[in-house]
View 1 (cartoon, one colour):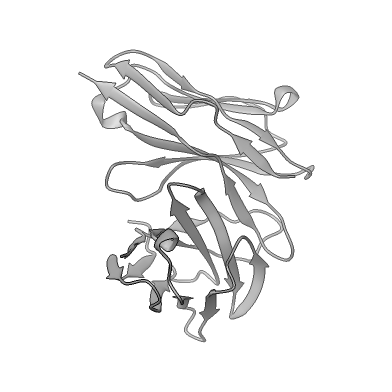
View 2 (cartoon, rainbow over the protein chains, first blue to last red):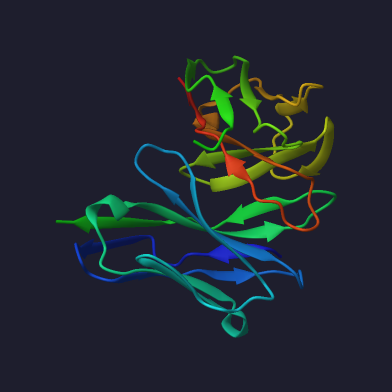
Length: 116
Length: 115
């Protein structure tokens, strides 16, 4: 079954701390995609990154970095030197090539609170 | 701004009523997806349409239905509303139907409150 697990429900850090959000997935597909989305208090879903299953290179974008490990079915997200503006709910998601279309399977989300 | 528009932004209604949520995809996108975000269930996929045809179905209740019109906008109809239907409903769109992944762009959502 397709499943995404974000074991950390809430994380609180102080500004400038590094923080890692964990994501573990289960899939029946040999080719799949993984995503991270950010949901700030305003409510919209902001796309952060997409990673396909055959590219295990880590990626860095500014203060954000992602570690994809197929061997452990994990796709973890690290924020370096966190800022108050990083406070949001972060969702990890997995593509589900089901039927004749594609859905996203989301984890339950991790609420990150960054205090000054 | 993703280019996906949803109306209304907020909707308050009573149990037993019926409402319609509207979504306009990004220009050029043929697929529309509906997702429900609730405190109990988290973010769940409901249904996908591609160029007017239903392509994939998730955990969508029988009281809910959707359609995609020739101009590609989509409507999600929720009937016999219950308190538990209170949620944030997102629409997303993508260029194609599936197979090789096509990135989904999300709208701002419609917050439905059932009293």
